[in-house]
Length: 76
Image (cartoon, rainbow, N blue to C red; front, side, top):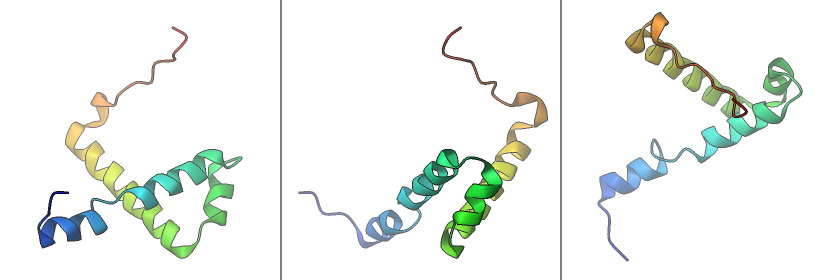
């Protein structure tokens, strides 16, 4: 087993740990609609949604409106 630094351990326990974010995305994906899914989230999960929405906004500023990735269906 390899030892990690205290700062790396702190990062993994906080910013580097995306389990909560992944779970919130799964819950919203499984909901019958986005608004209904939001209603089912607790305050911590809603904070995660706000954080993810802010990240999307920041990313869109960086890449610009004309450079959004297009979804391609798997059947094409």
